[in-house]
Image (cartoon, rainbow, N blue to C red; front, side, top):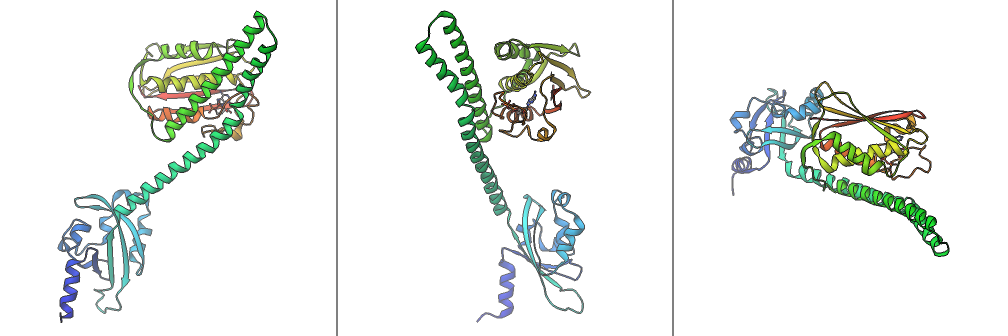
Length: 360
Ligand code: ADP
């Protein structure tokens, strides 16, 4: 039979958990050799220290250190924390503390048992991220179904009505008007489908970002000519440069085009009676390019303002102005990919100003 002392020695030598004995002050008085793999230090290097000495700065910054230390001081507690390992950088550990009993010299007061749980913490994080993505996707799908049943139905109904009319009526003018109306509805449908696809690509993390030097004025003019003039011929869009040397910006052509197109189309379609939209280009103090799109339209009610960047959200004053409520949520993500920012001010009934800042 093996002697009990030898059994304890074998356990201490071969345990994969780190077992420490602490004095009443929580200072480590004994540690098993597994300290090398758990903390990256030999037992003799950690004796005289406390487990809190190894906490990572990131973890301390997130926690209130005094509360945290109190946790370590509490016998019979179980705590998860992050440490800076001597070699393996940041690791997650879990310790349990057990009171040993009354030692008159207070040298052997608490026993701690510590395990490296980094892999399981990462696994849980991955699972939580996957779950969040899955939930986002399912929210996206159910929103898509309700949008499809409302918004997609209207243009299809208009097209259907025009076809029915052409079956019974003839004449050059009637044909021309019907074709024009159908073309408009098809553009609308295409726009909505493009938005949905963009949102889906964003949701599943498939958007590419390929920046190059772009002439911003040319890009804005192209968006006005192709996306706005045809759909909103009654609105005049003025471009004003507040700084002469504004020319190039580093950006992804298609993402930047989407941002400008969405903001300009919104400014036009929510303009209602006002016939003027302004684009003002300027430079900020930190040399970023600032693009402000200003309209004098219906504005955004105060209670809706904090939600308009959420996907599928539409303010309650949109009436029958068409839309899906996804454009701005995509714009926000695309601006973030450029490491830029987007802000707006809006007064209901008076108009809105959306400003995008992009580092140059
Ligand atoms: P959509 O235009 O398809 O409804 P967006 O995501 O582009 O979706 O915009 C979300 C909502 O924000 C709009 O439905 C509208 O309520 C509000 N909004 C955006 N731009 C303007 C604007 N220029 N003027 C008034 N309301 C706006």
